Amino acid sequence: MAVTAGPRTGPFWRARTHPEAHSPADEVTGRGAAHELAFRALQRETGNAAVQRLVAGPHERPKVEGDEDKERAKDAEAQRVPVDAVIQRAPMTRMNPALALAVQRAAAFSTTLTKPAPTRSNTASSTTHADNPTFTGHAVENTKRKCWTYALDTVEASGKIQIVYFTPDRYPAPTPEDDSGALTNVTSANVAAILKDFKDNRRGIPDHWSAYLAEDLHEQFHWDREWLRLARPAAKKAESKIGKLKVDKATAPTQSDAEKELEPKAKALFDAELRAARAKWNAMGDSAGDPPYRAQAPAVDALAARVKKLKKEKKW
Image (cartoon, rainbow, N blue to C red; front, side, top):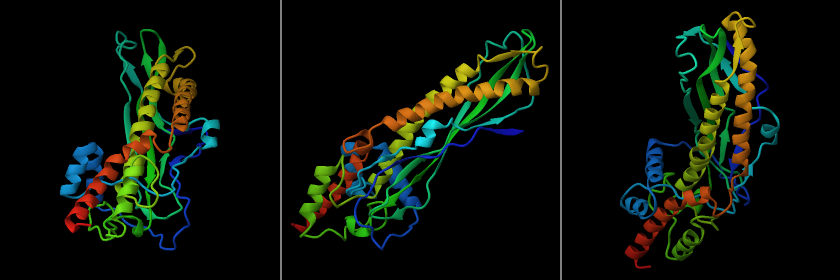
């Protein structure tokens, strides 16, 4: 039987804002397989290697432009209310008495990240949302010591990244949404401004010109390099503390009795560690020059290389 313990806290969003006038051309657009392949490839590369590959073919995405001061929308409620944990009871397990306390099986940590179709706006922000991690577990009987302990089985961290692109006129290659298309927005009149924008703001906030894949790299950094790098060790620390919980069989004769006694304590420990991880995430920098902005630089550099190549070919 699954039990949901405690109220669900509100979502936590890390976002970049676009403080320009909203365009009536805002629309929802789909993300194709080519876009994902380009993004993943660029994410694995850095610096000149990314630039060289993108000049040769489909390209990774640069950072999102605009006066988009990336703000982290901090969820005050998430800091006040305990993290929501789902507790799953498993069939009763009897451990070999000689191994009951010696064996500590690590809970499987899994992640689920949802990416809806990107939208367009010159005012709305891309966001990275982390749900409250959940766990499953069960009471374990130690017949030799005549007690029950509690073991976690799984921990899951789920979330969502909503990408918001600018309107097409702000991208050198307006279609498709992976910076690999024709550079139809680049002209002899604006090529210098485009390259200056990319050079000046490769790790910051663009003045006007942007690249699609930068948005993805920036938000993915929030998820992979910030949130998960905090959530995983927090869950592991909680699991270690939970493994020390016990209740004697005189107090809890059955597994059900033991779980009624131990589950609330397990949840309290889990909540505390994940809440501390979320507080650390809240405190991380998300302004020009901070790690998420630096993460988008390879995409900006890659698109700049394509523009420079076109400029040379056209002799502008």
